[in-house]
Amino acid sequence: MRKPRKKSFSDLVLENKLALLKDSEAMERIEARLEDKHVQKAE
Image (cartoon, rainbow, N blue to C red; front, side, top):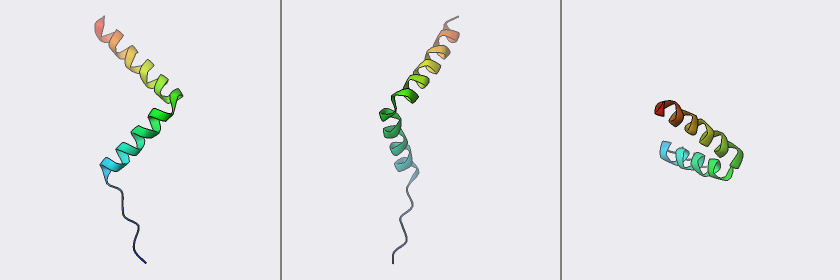
């Protein structure tokens, strides 16, 4: 039997990105956090 191929870092990042795009609640939290950062920088 063959060993399962280890996923590369870029594969993991892509997988994570796709999972986040499907998770609207997580996206909203991220967007809120980014918005807060931009508001603080503008002050």
